[in-house]
Amino acid sequence: MELKQFLELFNPLPGNHYIQITDKIDATTLALQKMIAAVEGEFHLALYTEKKLQIPDVLKETKIEYIPNFSKPFRALPRDHDLVIFKDVFFRHQNPELLLRIAYTTLANTANVIIMQKKGTMDIENTKELLEKFEFRAPNAIDILPEYDLVMAKKMHMWGNGL
Picture 1 (cartoon, rainbow, N blue to C red):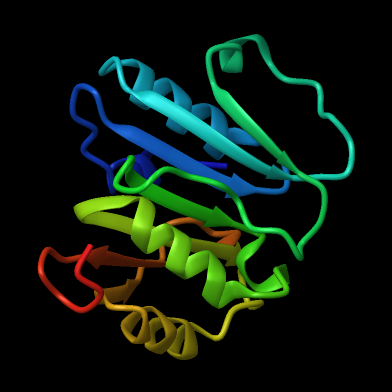
Picture 2 (cartoon, one colour; picture 1 turned 45 degrees about the vertical axis):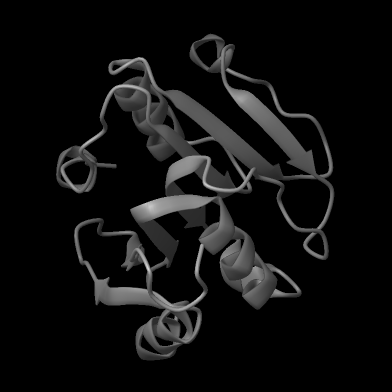
């Protein structure tokens, strides 16, 4: 997987916190962790899996939450993250709207949310509308990974939900 263009979407600053919500550890997980570690930030991982996975050594400092099934939400503190990435789990969850509410609450102002799904499995226009419904602004479909559809939107200060 070529991640150079994907990683160019981000501009991590010292002390930033990123969280990826996914069902597996892959190249995107490792690349995000490496990028945020380079600026002495924190990388958090919420893993939807029934069994404990073998964790690579480079993720030893990563805060990992194991979630046993797609009816349960991930946990995150209010305004604790500068980026939330849902990868391969958003539309499998029983309540995707709850996931967006949690994402909105945990994101700092002007921070981004990204929804990534295997190419062809996400209705991009409906996803953009859903993000707008939950007060995320400027949703865009970004075609930079051959295997994935990606929609990115921004939480704007003083818009909508007041957080």
